[in-house]
Length: 66
View 1 (cartoon, rainbow, N blue to C red):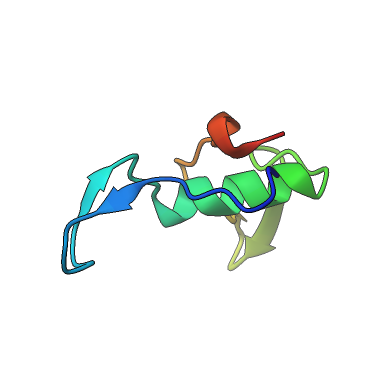
View 2 (view 1 turned 45 degrees about the horizontal axis):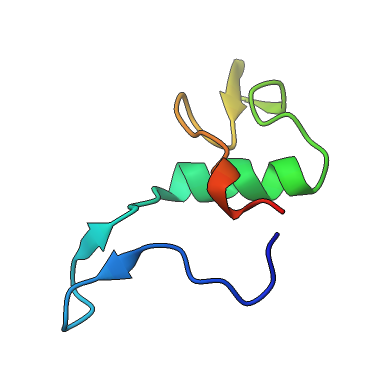
């Protein structure tokens, strides 16, 4: 990741995102990408069903990668 950067912007109270919103699934996909994992192939089985850590969504945020 790029060191010391800020990505996105909130309103003056820090309550709402006003620029470059990143969902938690996108954040997880980006962290997994940095660790060398493909978030779409990384699954675990629970109750006879396969689950992904990023659910059915999640995209790598390439703007914060070095």
